Amino acid sequence: MAHSPDAIQSAFGRDEKVRFQTSPLGGTVARLQYGRHEAVIALQGAQVLSWRHGPRELLWLSPLARLGTGKAVRGGIPVCWPWFASHPTDNDKPAHGFMRTRDWTVHSSEASDSGTTVTLGVETTEADRSLWPHSAAVEVTVTLGETLSLVLATRNTGATPFELTQALHTYFRIHDIGGIEIEGLDGRTYLDKLDDYARKVQSGPITIDREVDRIYLGDTAAISLVERDSKRHIDISSEGSRSAVVWNPWAEKTARLGDMGSDNAFRRMVCIETTNAGDDVIRLKPGEAHRMRTCYRAG
Ligand code: TA6
Image (cartoon, rainbow, N blue to C red; front, top):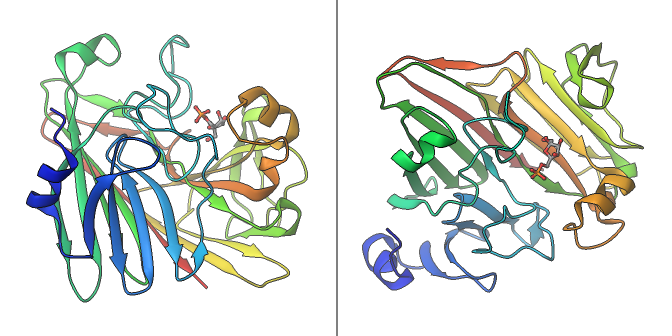
């Protein structure tokens, strides 16, 4: 049930540290503050739209992004659940599951010396069973401190076991795609989506000069996005995940997508996604729960 921003603000606002308001993009957002850092999370899809570390915006968001259109927002940190990418057997079902366009409910908020936190939740409904014949409760907890961390937690609330694939599909903002390296995946096997999911092995840091769409498997718990010239980096640590996706659409797919905002938008972003995807499938029996956590440290 949608609540007004004012009603949510009175229940969960925390002075200037947690504020709920209507976004210029439409829809209600939570604005978190911690010192000179700020994050903005849309209730739609529990999607982080912005992470400012001091003066620096570290996430890429399409200039065409709008909330409440029934379409997923391009950019920020989309929550892909209960399947990653295309549905395993039915391409008519929405890519990356069906919770990105759903309004989530605020469950809690907290402001402490170590961080500012908001937790959003959603449950599957009877109407969802045509998309996914199971029952689950999902929560996303976003904590802003000197780092930005997200926990994606799923509990099987039904009577049948299910398989789950998912992603925190993060769009990082970069100066230029030609100037980055992605470290921490040397020697890892990856599934190359652009080559019929062929299994290949990463050699050295990842550099990108074309469309890349890869599911890295195994120990993907420590990854760094490095901008060579500025030496700036974002260190990504994760738990509850044994896969990670690296994606850049390059020029041709950017044109096909049509919602990136400009033909060369691909040069200013790269997705490094904390996932349970590929071979990394989660299986939950009734009553069981799983949590996947990712944490970003900017340097
Ligand atoms: O995570 C990479 C990917 O699966 C790409 O294949 C591309 O489809 C991207 O996600 C964006 O998906 P979306 O449904 O948000 O357009």
